[in-house]
Amino acid sequence: MNNREYHFEFVSIGSNLPEEKRTAFITMYNTRAYNPVVLFGLSVFLGSLGVDRFFLGQVLLGFLKLITLGGLGIWAFVDLFLIGSAARRKNIEIATAVAVSLKN
Image 1 (cartoon, rainbow, N blue to C red):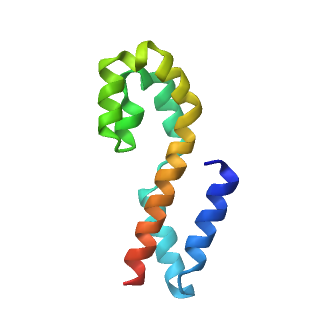
Image 2: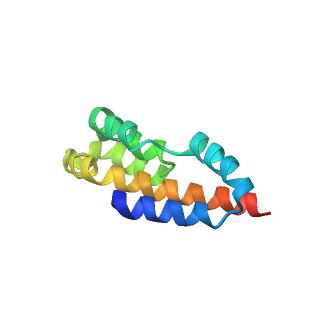
Image 3: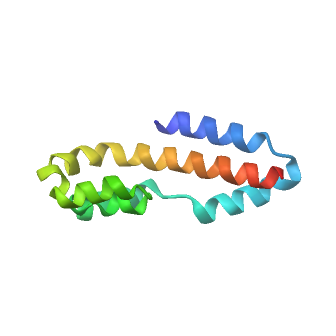
């Protein structure tokens, strides 16, 4: 998911909420969202140990990456390009969950 798709999806999720709940939505989202820049840093320095995937809650991928030492470096290198998109997808999941919790 690129940045444009992410922003479009995020705005559409937020715009479906009533005006009085949007501030609560932004506050709750900001406390739970993942920063793609931080994840990129984790991927650069600790990616071969799977820390970036563990941080995203992808325990199985993190464990596989750990025991293969980042796929002998290949998987760790590829993840440098994929981790930002994974963070954005996870953030959309978080935004959707927050919006659903506020609608109830």
